[in-house]
Length: 291
Image (tube, rainbow, N blue to C red):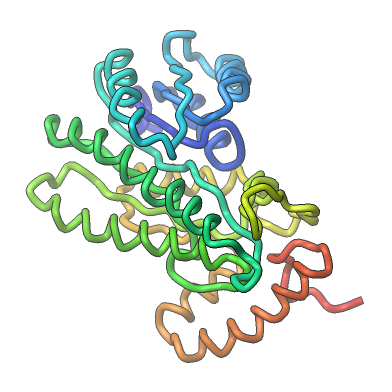
């Protein structure tokens, strides 16, 4: 609470899901907020609720429409936040989309779109904000990656690739900033969470949306994921895995016993694909018994 109160925090993807919940919790903590997404009307809704649940004033929350794929706009967007608040203490790279499709069925332009949004859009915005933080010699760059950034899973080949790219990029960037010990590079790796990310996933072609998102109730509540994220940010945790079991256990297996992890993922992967083809959520609990 004391670490984040009064800090200027810029959250992308703030109109729904984890980004929206992060915004509410940051508002309650007393952080000054810049909130961005493509849908300005949804951002205004989020701002209105923030004002209702916190002591923030109208001027304490900047609504800034942002398209991560429009990289030519990122410098101007950064300057807008700096003009309004005078500084950026924390950037939360939360914007992005997931995927639900098999590689053999998926057009290559879907992979291009995933990389443009999840990876290139994120590092583009980071570049402009980091320049400001280097001048101040302090700040936090927080990126919402995924457990898919440290393992592989079917139906998400492009999404996994984009998150692996982010993991590699920010792990490398951290080593370039050793002369700036007060600039933190923090990677958050959530597992399945009750957010709206499933409703907005990429499918086998860009024009198609997911027909049935399935029941999401078995996943971690969004507010808990957001709370653990902010705890990680406040304590400068370099990488945080935020998930319930059995997904968290698989992360540890993937890290420490990869041969066993590959064997297990082959078995779990079949179930995941079966779930998806049956019209239920691909991440439905693997521990549930068949009816």
